[in-house]
Figure 1 (cartoon, rainbow, N blue to C red):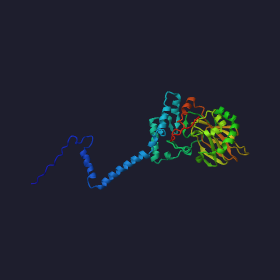
Figure 2: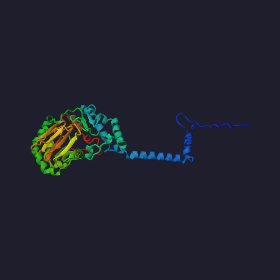
Figure 3: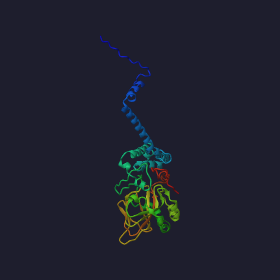
Length: 376
């Protein structure tokens, strides 16, 4: 007669019994046993390999990703963001509120930019650009690259209707303008005209021999040569040039120049130069061209196209235009053309708004590094 041996029951201590929240340590050991304590070497190697890969990925993500640089003190985007958040923190001030609601950093309104959600968005954009293939994030910001800069965030320029303003970086959407708005800055234009002769002589004796290729010529010129010599540029004041041209510098200091969002420089075009259609970085400014050397040639008049309109330069006169509109130059004169370019505040930007927007962190905002524009 066969007898059977009753199956032994395993009695667990309370600490070993399974609960609804997890698995007992004995069961974990039982689960790992085939991997760690049997001859299944392949399974063990797989576990070790997966662990190593995860550790390597974590190390790479922390050391090679944009995260450390993004949060780096002084030079990281987080430092810029927190300073900007403080600058625009007075929500009872009408000027601050208008900037928060109507000023756009590329496609992002400033109210969103200085929010925690906006900070997260820019961080995610950097991670996406670093690790993913995406045309928008991977495309170069030509203005930044031409001037030796790199950006924490940008949107590539996209051409639209030339008669619609389309600034590439800073768009204050409450400002009105037209392609050639001379009446908006008449007093400033008259001041430049009155000093045209002095400025021309100073350029010819002290600065013309020191002209160099304009940085934007790398991407905006497809024929000819475009040279410049700047008093104020992306890094702010050029002390050497200002010292060499004290009369010009003195006149500039009498004008409402927007140093954070504009330039002051002498611009020279060689015959046959074509500056491609493009728009400026902001509509916060109005641009003035003082004619320093404008050739008078029979059968040819040098002009600039702004939007769908054309206007000619004249010797010792001032041409005023809004470079937030698409503009283009085809210069076919027989000798060089030289102008002094000066960027002024758009007159509808209020005094209080100018004070806020003149904060040194605004001009280079979104640019990697610690560079700030050197102002007077």
